[in-house]
Amino acid sequence: MSATPTAGEGGSVVEVRDLGVNAKEQKILDSITLDFAARSLTAVIGASGSGKTTFIRSLNRMVELTPGLSVQGKVFYLGQNIYDRGIDPVLVRRRIGMVFQRPTVFPMSVFENAAFGLRILHEEEDNIDPAVQEALTRAGLWGEVKDDLDRSAFSLSGGQQQRLCIARALAIRPRVLLLDEPTSALDPMASQHVEATMRRLKEEIVLILVTHNVGQAARVSDRVAFLHTGRLIEVGPTAEILERPREALTQQFITGRF
Image (cartoon, rainbow, N blue to C red; front, side):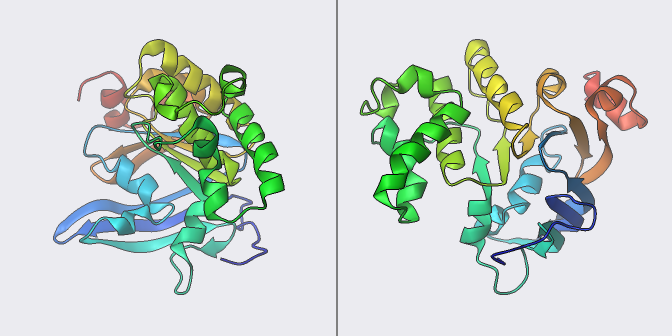
């Protein structure tokens, strides 16, 4: 990717244009166009099988890791199409990080989990300590682990492990963070901590959240995008979409009719 990319025409950090994903004869995503502005949190909602996860995995080229899928259309990051020939997908994923549904901590200390990406990138040793502290602070975990950073990451609770995964993603300073149902495996209290972290982070970077929980979308997001059978049905400010949707399909989904 360009060392000095510029923002897209509308000043958006990510711009999706006519994005489609196919699996042989099956169309998973159908011509989605959507922009994501700086310092925002967009919740992508929809029923199971609507294409939510495939959509966000397309935004940092992780969809390519699934055999048999083909991508059409364009995804611009700061004005540059991440699917252009010659673009390194590893660099794309550094700029556009991702946190998965279940916490994926590694069998090492809390510190080394947070520092993992920095070491892969051969960050200078003097920079690692402050970068880890900053990432753990931004993820809302520093106060809970600062006195025992050498403890195993497996000793943390599920919610703490998920915030550690967020810290690991933040340590390499992405401009965009994708979150694929990050609280679905957590209890209500742990979910509250992760939601608080998301609310803080949306003041700093672009967050794109896949959630099956309409209540969570209402609590944390600025904007909601509703997908149905691979199509973008409706997008707009959170209160408008959840309280006054324009489309009948949106109304049916948020009222639990499918």
